[in-house]
Amino acid sequence: MASATSKHVRNSTQPLIDIARLSQNLYEEWCAEFSPFSYERKGLIEVYQTEKAFQSAVSHARTATATGLPMEPLNRSELHQLEPHVDFNVIGGIHVLTDTHVYPSGLMNSLLQEALKMGVQIIESEALSFTTYQGKIVELRTREQSLEADLFILAAGAWSRDLSSSMSLKIPMIAGRGYSITYPLAVCPLAHPVYLGEASVAFTPMNGDKVRVGGTMEIVAKNTPPQMSRVRGILNSARRFLPHCHFPEPKLEDVWYGYRPCSADGLPYIGRSATWQNLVIATGHSMIGISLGPATGKLVAEVAEETTPTVNLTPFNPNRFHKTS
Ligand SMILES: Cc1cc2nc3c(=O)[nH]c(=O)nc-3n(C[C@H](O)[C@H](O)[C@H](O)COP(=O)(O)OP(=O)(O)OC[C@H]3O[C@@H](n4cnc5c(N)ncnc54)[C@H](O)[C@@H]3O)c2cc1C
Image 1 (cartoon, protein in one colour):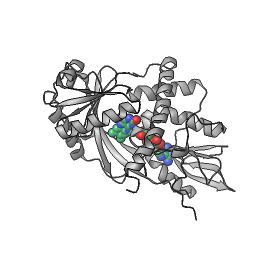
Image 2 (cartoon, rainbow, N blue to C red):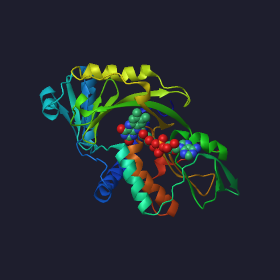
Image 3 (cartoon, protein in one colour):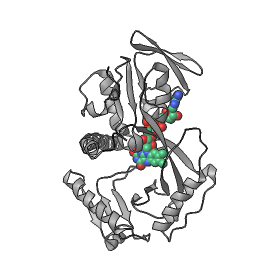
Image 4 (cartoon, rainbow, N blue to C red):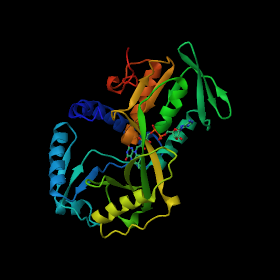
């Protein structure tokens, strides 16, 4: 709550733009080098049903355009030209021109193949705790074995806080659960990713044959069973904005849900731990971890190698909430 201020939002804008731009440039490089992962440069369309929300979005679009992120207001006919195969129940939209999107499973498969080609050894096991000695981590214990290393990277998403407590670290973070349902594209043949402004629900056409509908930010303990009422909430919004598309209610086992690692101030934690010299922290990416992933990887490598980071890491300092006494 202490971070939910206009000042903090203003101060966070440029650091987030810088890291997002770096990430997007890296995605472009990966696209040229890696096996395809359905990376598409189509922008994103936000749509609005109420005049108040639309006008507020138009004003936000002006500010964003002035900051170097071009956004164009769309009336209903301009929206129809961009999305001729669906019929929106909205008064207008905003085209966020520079957004790109990926098919996450395609991305992860592609990264896995590249890592294996580079000789990376992947050990699939649950990390349980760490042994520390004289300011350093000396050992990681997993279910099956103990592993020694020169350098450790804590990147366990919403679980980073639980894991860090075994090495007396406090990383302020909560898990924000979200849900998504993936339909054949024919259910809702969108050409662009679309965000329902008033409902905070996102549609992403993926891989040329699917459309993913996702949303909600549920603050619950990670062992709380998933709630079908949340899924119904997403689908009801989808039906309100796209009344001519038929979104059947899925079975619970066909619903995906995941935990966003939400930091205390909305900025990721990237950098070396002040407590353990050989620990680099890379977590807390909240709602934009896919967007910021490539840049985070590069920055982690730079921190590990002690070279000058490509973007200023001060706003992302993982020790920023440590109390100094
Ligand atoms: C519904 C929804 C929609 C989203 N949409 C977007 C979007 O459009 N754009 C975007 O940029 N981001 C989006 N996000 C956010 C994005 O998914 C996260 O920011 C991102 O996944 C965080 O990456 P991470 O690697 O830090 O954590 P995770 O992706 O959660 O990965 C952490 C990994 O660590 C593993 N792990 C945890 N504990 C241990 C342990 N003890 N031992 C071993 N392994 C462990 C977990 O199994 C997991 O594989 C969305 C999230 C949700 C839920």
